[in-house]
Image (tube, rainbow, N blue to C red; front, side, top):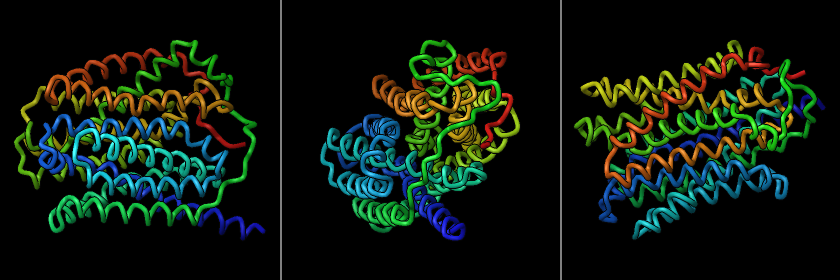
Length: 399
């Protein structure tokens, strides 16, 4: 019986890695902005809003995915997410107007991606209660590697087949990976939460939102996500237009971001089991602040630009990984899904705000200055929370 259980959970792990790899491919979106801008005869800053809408839809869908799982089951929802992702990418290739691009590439692709992301990740972790860190690292790493792997694949497709065919092949591969992975997965047995981190009280959502520290954590999360997601969405274009890099060199920014994002998830995730998570988050904010300062105040060449975007991507990846544990440090494990779910909306809201500012003022710099100011504010907020660590001194352990 134990051998059967091990077989099921390792098969689920493989399926989760496949799903996450396919879902992570959306982070190569900036490779297509220039082509979409030319096709639609629309300004690049307006086309780039698509990725902001994608991120917003991803965040909302992630927050609601557990309800879909309760109603339809894990496998059915994950298969639906894969089919929706493929359909959204295919329809994006047919978009003949900006509103159609926003609907297909922004809302549909983002909703499908978000539905599959947190659902499959959390299910995988439940299968490995004694190795939560390892399971998370495998799933989160696959999501980051999806961006890196599809960067080279999509560049090759764009070069040899053109934009529309590149979208078609990307859509097919995404469906195969996500649906194939879903077929390997099995829903984890429900285990009641009977333990929390030392000294931490469990708060219901209506209790948590009455506390200033909840909204400080929400602002920090929104800010770091805004910096990372906005830069990911326009990285190649910033390299070409702001740093005057050749298109081939600017495209390497996508790989730099993917690698730094993955490194942040792994390094800061591991450190968060050894150090207070709020200290880790303060360090992540400082990294993002350093990267944004480089972009704004230092004469840029290819190397300094790569360092700048790597700092921001490292901070973003690490923050996404550490934040569920951080929220449980302050508000307990019992209501983590709801308490973190509301904060997670900042993932999409931050990206949309960044894109709207760029859209309104017609350039990258206004958004960069706004992010810089918010990062300074967030760093001060995170430091102010150090005396209120509570259970955050101790890593969360299964009992």
